Length: 135
Image (cartoon, rainbow, N blue to C red; front, side, top):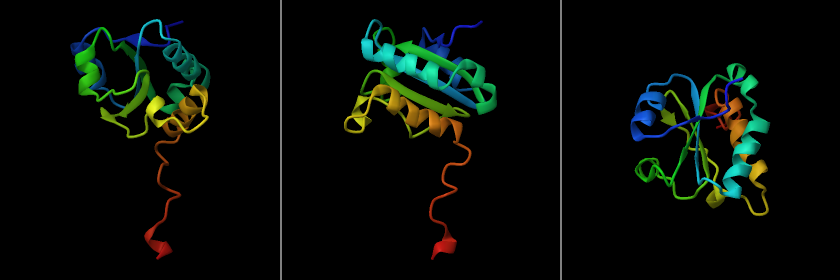
């Protein structure tokens, strides 16, 4: 079985793997050896197993070490590490998870769960919001 994450080791990897990708792509910015990074990655694996990728339109899950690629972290505006982000057809979704957006008292797993639910239902996002018919 393939490993869960494909590691990005250069900015060129990001440019060649994520930017031309069609469909959904998950990306995690992490610190090597950091317990919160490990918790985030573990929660993601549990909440969105690789076997569920196809049914949720996910092409791949990538990760990169912010220490090794600080210029990529800057380009992606990573201000908190770890950060869970995702893209649809190379466009980053506004819904990310990091400790800066953590709801008071929320566990890492619960925060990752919010993003996973958005990824799973991204095609339906906004359908239940107010419509012009409500006016």
